[in-house]
Amino acid sequence: MKAAPVPPGGGAESRYESFASTRWSIVLEAGNSATVSAHAFNALSELCQTYWRPLYSFLRRQGCSAEDARDLIQGFFADLIETRAYARADREKGRFRSFLLGTLKHYAADVHDRGRALKRGGGMILHSLDDQATAEIEAQVARATKWQPEEVYDREWAALLLRQALDRLTQECALAGKADLLSHLMPYLSASEESVIPYEQVAERTHRPVATLRSDVARLRKRYRTILREVVRDTVFETEDVDEELRYLCQVLAAR
Image (cartoon, rainbow, N blue to C red; front, side):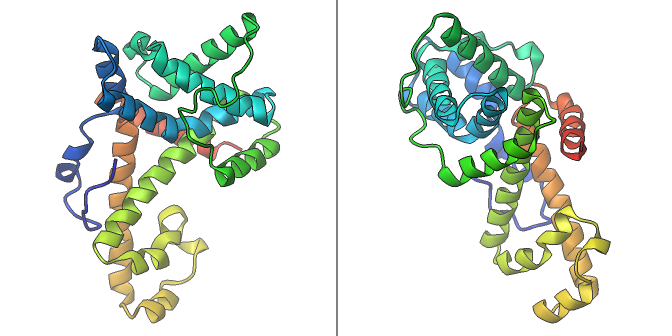
């Protein structure tokens, strides 16, 4: 789902009507239907494409081989859709990340207990697992020797949401003709101003006054925070859960 073409700093909340359908609403709508419509199937498949990375990280940290992790992910998503396991989603838990991980654990245990052979490709719900993304995950998992599988999963989940928010912000800036400006100011979004190059140097490159650049950064940060809240809202059942989920994910990323 693409972000609306809103220039940085615009009226954020009113511009997000296109994101009314959350991950939970897609699952619950499909679960309440007698059959899975083509629209629902495509929506569920999109969720699979979006959220495979944290699940793959979890399996690899658990000790699964790369090949088995790939096949478990493919099989899990195929099973999730084919058996309508999402229809049993517990909305009271309220976290889409918890639902996916809990359902994956159940599926993996079932595969193990029944001695079921993993089908290579698992039904190909995911057309492919991006090789570059997989390589990044492998490197991260190799470094995460002190982290439990659930912690690796949550860290990758948090990083995924940050990437989604940044992608939406990048798209908005591109549509507003500000892609080049964003490329210069990107470091200021995630780091303190003391740790990045001085505004004066950026002013020379962009031909914008320092005061204007500071205002640009303030607007971009505000817009980024708004988009991130929308991304997180997309994964929780209740709106009032957003702040708690944001705090938790920030703690996960800050942990050493």
